[in-house]
Structure formats: C-alpha cells, structure tokens
Amino acid sequence: MNKKAASKTPGVRGSRTGRPIMALLDLLGRRWSLRILWELRDAPLTSRALRAACDEASPTVLQARLTELREAGFVELGDGGGYGLTSLGRDLCEMVVPLHRFAERWKR
Image (cartoon, rainbow, N blue to C red):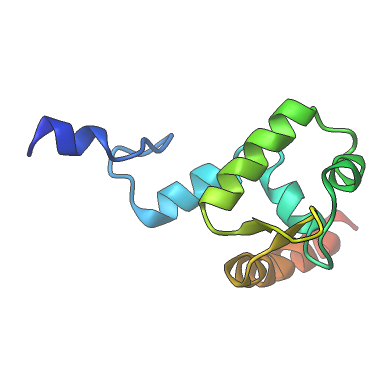
C-alpha cells in the first residue's frame, strides 16, 4: 500500500481498521457530540441557544463538535444561522430514541 494514500485515511480512536461502525462510535463518543444531536432533534437552534441547551458547554468545544458533525453530514447550518439536523442526522436520532427509552426504564 502506498504510504501517501494511507496517510489520507482519517484515524479512528480505538480502531486500527477504521471500519464505518468504529468511525461512527468514535465521533459519537466525543464530548458533547450526542448531546448536540439530541438537542437538535426537535428543531434547529442558534449557537447561543444550543450552548444554553448543552449546559453552557465551552464555545470552543461546541464549535469543534459542530464542525465535526457538519463534516460527517449529520448537522447543517441553516439560512437563519441556526444549526439543524440533516436527513442523515434525523435518521441517526431516530436510532437513539430506543436507547433513550431504555435508559429511562433503567434509571427508575
């Protein structure tokens, strides 16, 4: 394998293979990623509203996660300046809802 081609493959924490499931789990496991997606599940939010919904997360970290989620195709910046889910992001959130229901039952 060409060394130059190998260097273009983004690294995935916890995986030498970089399989899609590992890349997704790596992204979702980063601080605030799931929370951002969860807070955007009902409606787009401005940066300020999203930060408030995320318990005043650091603006730097929040913007880094938003950039990563945008690059992954889950979040988009709307015309009004707010962030919202793409159709792929909505699909992902639909998959998280059963986990949320399970967590609610488990926590009781």
